Structures are given as structure tokens and as C-alpha cells.
Length: 151
Image (cartoon, rainbow, N blue to C red):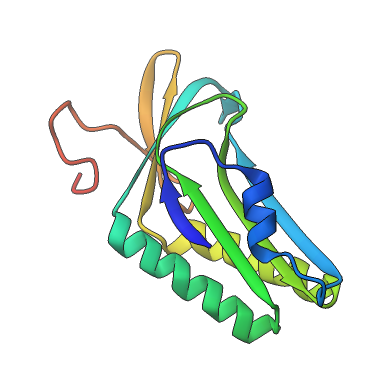
């Protein structure tokens, strides 16, 4: 299971996608919208993505994790659109025969997803908005009507 979606992430569905009787471990990572960042009160987040490319890159990450860490299954789901405080923005689940491989692969896919997949996050806070890059760097949101990815 690899996908972008605007709807709420259903955790049972993510876990079901990786579960099997042959595995003794499932590692699950959930990224959630927090109420603060860099000393500012966050109001909400908005995610945008280049769907075809993002899902293709997410699939490559899942296949690489399966190969590199010898895990049985990987599920990656990321939300797009406006997300409120406390909502799950991303879920990564990995099943493996043993916990070490599941933990390592799960960390790999979420770190690489943040670093390489074309998904952009805009943070709205009291007094303004910024686009948050995968590395954590920020830049001021462009004026309305401008392409946020070309600024």
C-alpha cells in the first residue's frame, strides 16, 4: 500500500496491509500535526504533492526498504490538503520477521520520504504562513497566485 490521499488515514487499514502470520514484528510511525513549531503557535498545516511522482518515489522507497532490510511488507500513506492539529499526516508501517529490521526499515522510509518525495508542507501560524522544506528550513509563503514550488 502506497498512496496519497486527502481523506483521514485509517490506521487499521495500514496495519492490515502489512500484517501476516509469517512476521513477528510490525513497526508503525505516525506523523501528526503539532500545535507549535519554532516558538510559534501552529494553527493548521496544508500539504501539496505532485501525485504521480510522489507515489512513484514512495513505491521506490518501499521496494528499497524491502530489499535493503529484508522486510516482508511496507505501507506508506501521506495526506494532502488542510490538516488540523492532532490529525495524522503520514503513516509508515513495516512488517518483518524480527523487530530490528522492522524498526530500521521504518525509520529509513520515513526519513527518506521527508528528504526525497515531492510533498510540500505549508504551516499556518498566528501572524503568517511559511513553507516547510523536508530539511526543516523555512521560507515565506509566496503571494497568492504564485507557484509555491518555484519561489
